[in-house]
Length: 95
Image 1 (cartoon, rainbow, N blue to C red):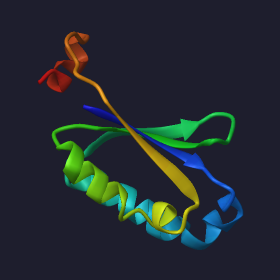
Image 2 (cartoon, helix red, strand yellow):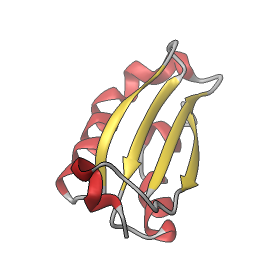
Image 3 (cartoon, rainbow, N blue to C red):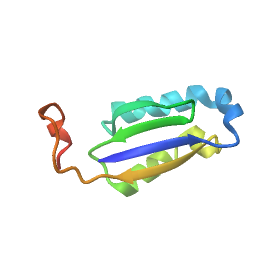
Image 4 (cartoon, rainbow, N blue to C red):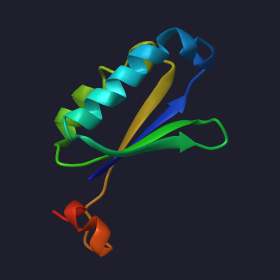
């Protein structure tokens, strides 16, 4: 499992230009089963995603396709978590 942090960079003001592409990229991630959760980093710092059932190299490649990453609107950081315990509702995350 991975946490993907997308922190706004100095190009944050250009986000509106690429929002449609960014949203489409997120949608693809949910449709292909990579993303299981998304949300905003507060206060207005960027976004975060939980990725599952992928490899680090596959995820790095996919994150590199995000228009926000390509245009340097956000700086990505990927954190890998080896889950060892979860609530029953999240048991699918245990590898």
